[in-house]
Image (tube, one colour):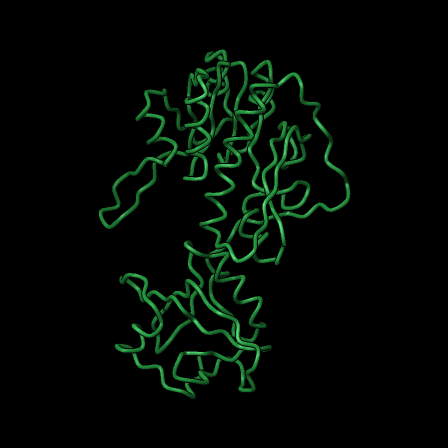
Length: 301
């Protein structure tokens, strides 16, 4: 098929590559515009932009798809279908209607649960047992379209980074399967019951509130690993917690360091950080951090 691919982050790259490997003609790739990043603040293309250029696919990076010129250019690619995976821009009706087979979205949740921008993070934060991927026909509403194919996986103790990679691979497989048998899949409307929304993650959510229960904090740590990184402050310095164990027996006030292993009391139980990261340094185990950064028993964080 002649495909326009629309995606931006690392999550989207394996899906683009799978379409190429399956022999589809990806006539264009749309991605968010390059942004300044790194110490030099150089303009940096998105992961999808970089991969598309590497395999010889034309790249377009409009700031919006609402103007007539952008919509006309999209239509001139004469694609059979558009495949969308974490693109980051709203698709207006003119874009949705341009390809004869419409636009299909790779959405990383079990719809209708976790419609919206951050389904992987929200599923972990909420303590969901399972999540998955839906191949969804796109409509004007926010992730409201019918589902053609889905698969699921357990969340367990996975971090957002691990789960993102797993769901990306799942989405690539499901999309290739869908396109190979497109006429055989009957789009199923999403049920009205069970709708939840996965709001965009704000940086302020990464600060750990030690008056929460320990299980909730452990989920927060996994949900924000690798980015933005859940953190505590010690003597005015931010320290990211990349992995923690939950300790059930703790009787001190929330925020109190209760032993020489950096176990920290919470509202219910305690957390024991196992992997941490100081600003500008590599991740390290708790014992290594404590050898050069004293956090005495009784310290209140």
